Length: 565
Ligand SMILES: O=P(O)(O)OC[C@H]1O[C@H](O)[C@H](O)[C@@H](O)[C@@H]1O
Image 1 (tube, rainbow, N blue to C red):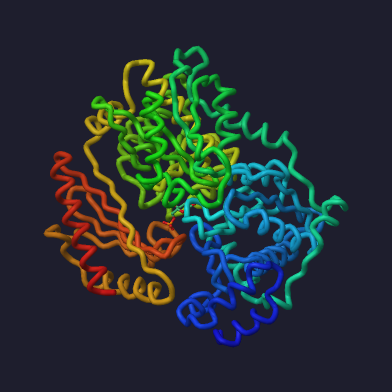
Image 2: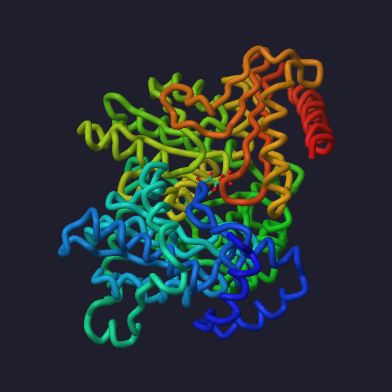
């Protein structure tokens, strides 16, 4: 693409959003900015399209959103009969989410596609639910999930309510790539389309059916004694979680939920935290301060589109400890399995699904309960796809639980993506279940480590922004493939290169360095952010030994990345 020519075309034609012309003007004398905004089209990554909001082909704006929607429309026209062409749309609280959702609807309707739109902002899992409930051919969610405030994104769901996976994404991407962003897109008038019944608002009934489905996920026997009056502090981090999460908890009988006031209402600036990601300690700080003030032992938060959950638990010294996504997943896995065994509700051939970068300690816990573990590539869409596979085999009830280290969990099959509402409910229930028995979640975790062996799992991210950053990441991955045989004094027992397609998985740019004693290191470029991700998993005699080895390995890679970039 000729960057200057494309830029000039945008200056002449991009006027559908009044914010665009001044943004284009501002980059006229900034070569780096201009090149980054125009050097490529936004790519479909782990979570669909994701990018900074702004003018340009490599940004999220009304044109890139409309172009993606025209591509989706063309795909639907080729693959579905006219009466099957229905699409559900939702969005989170981010800047321009409302506008982008409207543009998606305008383009789809102009292509003869019926649109179901949530009237209010709604979590990603609710979109997955609506696709299934309303028998749609696809779903579109406007969100950049947990990314910083300047980002937005576009997730595409298939007829099964699962995010489209590699094959469908490639077909849709081809449709999108074939389009000219100004001349090939069709639009209609939003208000007229609503009046004509071509855009219909999704009814309250769909949301209440979702709530009912979530509530059915409790693995507890009805007579189990638990104290639902225990105080819990909650934050939707200025996103979509408030209504569904508090409604579920209220209907489940929880009476003492305190919501962080500053983070209650939707706000695309996410003004109280650096970025709205419950993985980040600074993001959890305000909620923890309220937990301390309110004398609550437990705090949890969702990300803006409410598909993730992070938690903090008070320890014996009165400090609040943040648990990792792996730790929360292990606790939930053990909780669900133990309750299912206790209540004789364990399916005949139970299956747990995780990703290859999620802790292998799950395998040991699952084995204890006779549960099979399936490990897939990063992205909850692959877990959703696995549920679909089980469904086709008539085994959908064998799906017990799916989780990722990146704070995503799902215990049911009523949606096909990670569900922060479902996870919030189960985590709160698990917290009060143990607390009622005098056990804190930290004690429970320590018990699991004692029983199955200690395992330290950490994740480190290294930012590589823009065009240069992408090239640096490619170079680093190539160098890693060639040169690493010893890691911080540890011999690499085996190098798994997922680019070759291991264990029947689709090829992926992922390297796993197998170290002695079941320890391992995985390196991969993120599919959602301009980052290289380093996952370290150390099984050692004790915490101190694991920590030391983890630090050495982290230092090794930090130096390697610096040297090679
Ligand atoms: O590591 P990344 O490619 O950035 O993906 C990190 C996470 O991003 C999103 O939240 C996806 O829904 C997850 O399934 C994925 O694990």
